[in-house]
Length: 317
Image 1 (tube, rainbow, N blue to C red):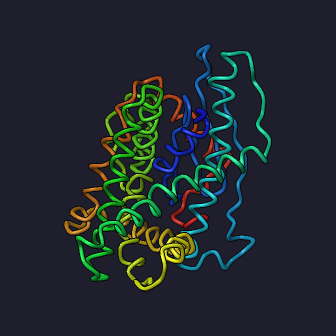
Image 2: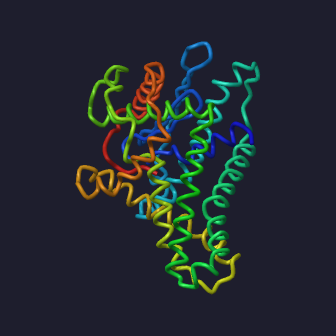
């Protein structure tokens, strides 16, 4: 598995929802997304910071239909993954290729291929494999549709947790998770209206309720309910296909829940509900050092500068 492909699989955990300012950790850097802009800051081997920034008008300006609840979540997920892959490519060229003297851009076809392979692997691992394992357990668990979907959901969550634990032990992922922590701390400081300096940002938590790790855990749980609608008499291949077709719906519903919980995260009941997602982030984030926080701050300030002061609470997809 190439490093870019492995990093894209990790990216599935790190994508943050785009309410106000969101972000994502990349190789030796951070991507920040404001409502109308995007910036990537990467620490080069020589110590300086490379920056790429651009205007990214909301897709909803051209296609108002994507503002609809649920649909906007599905669109946001896939556009975030596409943008994240481009950010990963830039960071790889700046942080790795320069060090090896092989700086070259990957074609859009190669980027699309990498994204397709990674998404396919994720679907097989998190949705098809649990279904197959549950099917094998039918002689033990019986034919109840409710029990079948509960067991399937438990297996899916276990596979997801094992995946996170396994990648968290990879040495080359450790620094990415530190930048993930730096991204969260910087967003927290910005949302609090605090000064964006390393000393100030370091005071904030590395756990954020809008993190992609929390989002994927919600996806796992929502899928238990939605997959229960699939007729149990369908053959295996139809059930597996239906799961793929229903993924945008699951992503959209999960997005709406994440958006709601982020706006009500001070409510005691909501705190209880989002606690597992925050706990999971202890695996996908690490405490960053000041130099990593500086990169996240640079990415944030560049994105806001291009954004030209647009900082309201409108949802962007």
